[in-house]
Length: 598
Image 1 (cartoon, rainbow, N blue to C red):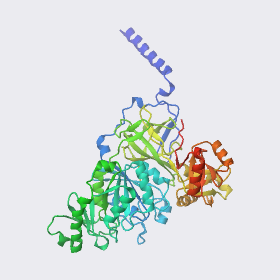
Image 2: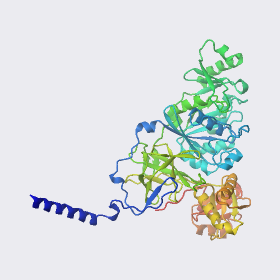
Image 3: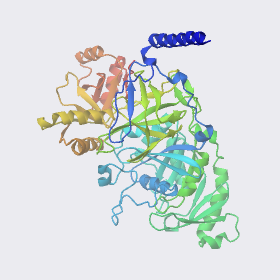
Image 4: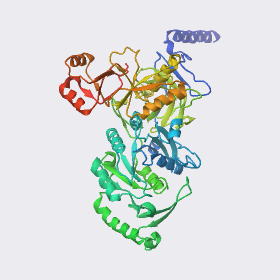
């Protein structure tokens, strides 16, 4: 018996040894090449090159349906001074994310907006860069994507809308639609986002709600459906009527920064006239109610999701009138994370594997650690701390040792995340805007995020040669995160001054400020005279040279982007239209996608 056992033992040992020697090296236990480990307890990430994905043996990363259903993800769009930052803070107040909402320009206490984390934002009292704010309310997990609302908004706004599932269009009730609101509306429509309309500042003298409806419908061809209806405006703004329930919410001004007190009364309450205490307002309300059902079609969520109808709300973010009513109704009407388009077709959030895409990069969110963060929108499956994903563009595997939940500049490590959530990943130069990451053996690729046509152009130079290394490092990192676009004049071999290109000139100020504040580099800007339109040419440089030789591109500035692609700058629409007509083979387009690296 002992002899038989001895023979069996030898056979097992030999078999194990043969398996170890014949197995591919990358399947041996413990084989790993670590590319990065962050210091000081910060987020860690390891890049493993040349290694087959080990997700074959792992359980699928399916997200529980209940976690998908309870999530709401939205962005607020507005013209400057429509009250976006105040509205954002009041939503956070009602969500319990902050205890005290202070107006951005409150001089008494010098408080700053929660969503404005960059020092330049605090100095100017405006939102310059997009921010993620996550909070819970009434059993829902809410991700609010705060976008810049200043006059010179940036591509950061466009990219952030790519990560949103819903949009809230904030309209100044006194001014109605304004130019930037129109521009952002078109981006939302391009993205296929359902649009909820909130007419703000009803505590001030405002346009008639019927006039606001006519203005929006006439400009956008978007049918309005008032969910609530205002009772008065200015000093006589009493509250709002919730049409389907017949409840009237009467508000009293609360203490600054605190929740407003509210009282409810039914529309058919016989004592309503006395409760309102204003005969004219009561008569106007009764007249409006008689007209509303005949003027507006019922709310149809299929049409809302198709971008044909918009639920409409009224209120005042400054005084909290109507804010919580809006929040409650948005959570019931807004869509949960939907299926997203991939190269292979729609992918549901309940897909059994984790997928997501990078929509924003941010350097030096924490100046003490010189970090570089990639903002990832989770599209399907469940993120788990320590999971390994495939990087779609490079086909390399990336180990995600941790992720961070974001609340403006505040961060905390999270163990799990679900579709609709935004997580921050440390970025050692691996990620670019538009990148897809996924688990499993089936490749996934979400559509890239385009660069839009800039309208402002300026040379940037470093007057101090001793700071050149810092200048190049800072400029490279800011370009990587898409603060502005970087062009070079045709024929520049890299030794000339680069050209900054942006949607608005404020982004130039941001670049200069951050180079000085974060990298200690002073810079000088010199305008590229008179040019205000850019178009990418889809055809080659050879065709451009031919058209230049023929004189058809006289007065056109020839530039190239970071991928060496032709970019033509024009001084006016007339010249652009002339070139489009005379040189149709150039195939000029107002946007460009980053090329894929296979």
